[in-house]
Length: 465
Image (cartoon, rainbow, N blue to C red; front, side, top):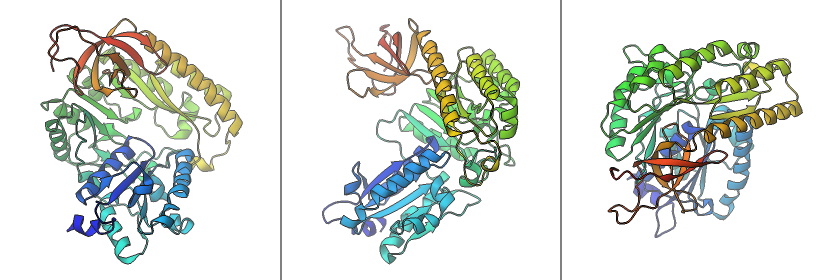
């Protein structure tokens, strides 16, 4: 019934078309995959052109002001399409939808649907109600159990890597962070369901699994009878067909000894961790409510390096938090020199409505924030480039993802998640002239670029395909 009911809203002779626009982090990307899956079941094809769509879904982020502004700009571009196609349905979901609710429809009266972070599973029914009644729909209440986490999107044909959502929400309430207000309180999926989903993905040909959550290392801690995160990792690590296992994102205050030890004992857990720091000053960390000190963070880094000497680090950093002085900022610069991150996602502080920090005194002037961010990013670029240059001449094991954007080389990622582009020429004769997505091949690094590596494939004569 679903596909037949929906199909009559598309022009005769074709299936209805879905266009998705996604802003934000991996969680939003995964949520968009769930939306695609739901509407594939409804009989939709996906289109890359919003002008040909029968349904437009804008999946939003409100962690910072800039992504939120992009969403409002997107609405300004997409809603006028309803003039040429009155049957077009436009929906906004994600964090902005959760935060704004029906106020979005007050500001944009032609917006058909607003659905919050816990209401993804309801979207197909909301679309049907709009088409049957012509009335706008809004759902942004939090649920005790989040139905969309039980939906397992089918991996795209030939997919090598897949996200698996293991939890949602956060109970930390850092002073600057809007996540608990737009994603809700912490909820951990049952481990049996997570492991079953991982097994399905591996059977379908996926070789790398990325576990997702706002704070994955607190997984299961507040669920009676559930295993903790290190034991979940161990259970997934044993699944047949797995080649690589990753996770994002973790919180330093929940970095347990067992989780640190897992980097040295689990066969498929990659030597890379995203460990947000946010600031290098203890005074700023305390105002943020992060629950650790700079020295405590450095101790975690050293223990991780003892467990896995080749581990690579990435982090999030906020520049210009209220009350941050030049001395505080220099402490942050000192931290990135000491840790030597491969990658840092750095941002100017952005006040988020409803968070404690939005009301803090000592808001740093915007021009000062911009100047500090430029200094920070210049230093981090130097560190990133130096880290990459140290790899020239080494051989990296690269998980092949496919051709690069130009189609001239193959592209993949090493076990530390660095992008590696490499030539694929093979000596003749050879029964397999090219690698395939999902293969892990040795690549000798010949050149370091700003954010990636180049190399040539090493041929041992014993490669497995």
